[in-house]
Each structure stands twice: as structure tokens, then as C-alpha cells.
Length: 506
Image (tube, rainbow, N blue to C red; front, side, top):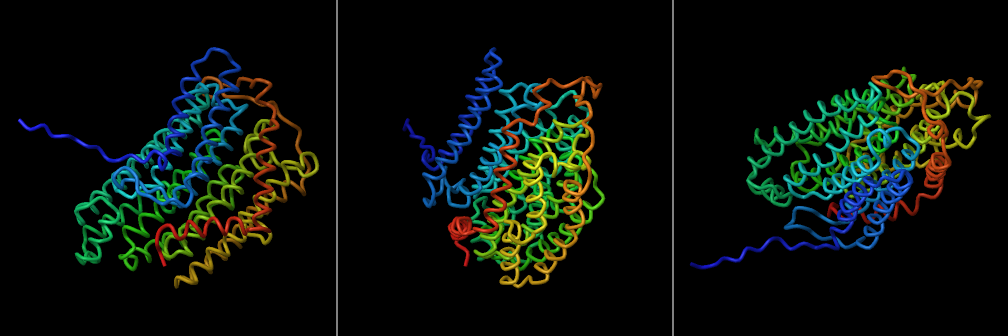
């Protein structure tokens, strides 16, 4: 009998180190949450979570500009993966800071809450670095399942439970659609590797193959669900409104970044040779998304719903960078994702602060008059709104110009014009928020109540009624970053230049 030695794939632990930091941090945080001391749960656990995110950022800096394939080619550790990891981790740190005095970590238990946050970020890293169809689905599910739970962590509030359930149901449909699409692509090409799919498209003449085209369409729909691309965006306003606001902030930035990252890698490497087949359909989706998102936001009185509809429109802008399949398109999309992080985190930090300070929740009325009474909150929200609208001297303006440049260069000038039209429509609701802050008198604070058993009113602890230094600091920091990168965009241009070259596009 001859003994056969089995050899597993070589593991490059240096390349995997940012992912290991997140998953290892989740384990440590989960164990730390079992400690009985209140100080350990409420202070040490969040600090450990921030440390895990910080370690992932530091290890990403160590691995910057060292492109390599990992785990038998299942993952790619390149500048795109690392840049996306930084976005996920910065969004995660912001979410931890905004959750510091929140109800959700106390109701769900601090260890579980923060471990789920780290696990979701790890799933995003896996998705962003995937170069195999199996890994794409694993990353998609690893980021989704923790978020289903996190949306429902304010368990005594009906809308939070409803948010988690809606996200679970719609997210499951998106997952199934993506899986069917990936299976059809495998059936048409006979391989799950992105490089193998690209070779099969080039050699087997699959451009008009019905199975391949259906697989591409279903895969696009699955990614569109996660990115809130119309008409697959219906879940977004309800889920964003019902979820705890720090989780909404994290989802609005990090989940969209993960979806756009895999769209860039999948469509611009595995499917790049069939770009003439899928690009017109994707451009049409982007156009519909821009119009639907901006028009849907106009009549909203809830800041979270307004920002949800805004995120739909922003997804349409970003999708334009994927359509053109060029280095410039990749650079523009990653640049816009980075500045979208600063604008959105500043806006949601102010929403969190006003939810705690007033009894008006996330209604626009909660920010009325804060230009005179709370300028440290009014200015970050003003800069965020101006940036999202694309007003000059903000990072959002530079990002939109970059996207329009990529679209014109790629032959989609009409979509670039539509971005300008969408930005003009968006002024109708962004300026309404600014006017509420600076041109209306403030309202008297109302009692701040937390939901008891299925929304029975129970007064919140005193600590939860304060915005907190950390919330104001997050708002000010990200608001300042929105202004800084609008005036001095050079550092982000340099970073995205490295990212654009990582996919090997012309």
C-alpha cells in the first residue's frame, strides 16, 4: 500500500494579515464581552475593536504595493484590496465611536455587537479580494449575515426588528440571485477562477452564449442588491431608517464599497472581454439609479431615509466608473468611495448626536436652528451636504469631476451629463437640510425615550442622552476631511493611482 502525502495550498500569512487581524480581533472581542465588569464591557471591548481595525489598517500599509495571489489563487492581495480594507476599517472605527453610548451594544451585549461588526468587515475584505466565484459568494455571505443581526440589535424597538427582518428577506433573494448567476457562468466557462473565465471568453466565443449572458445578468443583479442600485434598492430606505444609526452609517459606506470593489474586479478582469455586452445594461442601470435616488429623496422628512435615497443616487454615480472598464474608471470609483466615506460619516455622526439630544429622532426638525446653538454639529453636516451635492471646494465635487472625466474618456459622455443633472436635482433636498440648520429657529428639546417591549416608552439612561465628545469629534473630523480633500486632493489621487494599476487595465 502506497501512502500518499496530501499537501494543502500554501498560505501567505503576511498577505492575509489584515484579514487575520479582523477575524482574530472578533474572537478576542467576543471573549472579552464575557467579562462581568461593566467597565470591561463598555470601555475595553470597544477599544479592543478599534485596536483590531487599527491593526488591519497598519498591516495593510505593510503590504501596500505587494500584489500577490493567496490561498491557491482564491484571493488577491493587491492595492485595490488594501485600499478597500482601509475604507472598511475607517468606517468600522467610526461606527464603534458612534455606538459608544448607544442602546444597541447594551441590548445585544457588547461582545457580540462588536464581534459581528468585525466579522462583517472581514467578509467585506474577502469579497473585495476575491478572484474566484466560490470566494465571491463566501465573502458576500460573510458580510451579510452579521449585518442582518446588527440591524435588529435594538431589540425593544419594533422598527429595528423590522429592519433586520426586511434586510434578511431581501438580502437572501439577492444572495440566491448572485449564486444562480455565478453557477451559470461556471457552467458556461467550466472554471471558477476569474483568469480562467477571461480566457474562456476569449477562446470559446461565448459573447452570444445564452447561458453566459444570463449568468452575467443575474450576477449583476445580485451585486446591485448589495449596492442599492435601482430597481433593486427597495429595501434601502426602510432598513436604513430602522437600523441603529451607527450600523446604518457603517452599512451606507462599507457595504457599498465592498459591492463596488467586487464589481470592479469581477467585471474588469473576469468579464472584461465581454464588456460590449454588459456595459450598456450597466450604464442603463446607473442612469435609472441616479434619477430614482435623487427624485426619491426630495420628499423625505427623515434624515436617515433622505440619506438612504441619497446613497441610491450615489451608487449610480459610482457605477459609472465600473462601466468604462479603464484604469481611469477604477481610480475615479475608488476616489469617490474614499470621499463618500468622509461625507457620509460626518452626516450620520450629526444624526446620532441629535437623536440623543432631542426627542425628535432623525426628523429634519431635529437639526433646526443648530447653526446658532450647536455650530460644531452644524458645520460638519453642512460640509457633508455640500459635498454630496458636488459643490466646488468639497471632496464630493472633485470625485464627481473625476467620474465624469472617466465616463467621457470611455465614450459614455451622456452618463456624465446625467451625473450633472442628478447633482442639480439633489440640491432640492441637500439645501433643505442646510436651510433647516441655518435659517430656522431651534425647537425645545423633547423627552428622549427608548423603546420598551415593542416600543413601549421607557426613558433612556442619562449617558445615552448626551451626544458625547466622541460623536462630535467624529463629525468634526470627517467634515474637515471632506473640505480638506476638496482643496488638497493630491494624496488621494496618488493613492488611487496605485489602485488603478492593480487590475492591469489600460
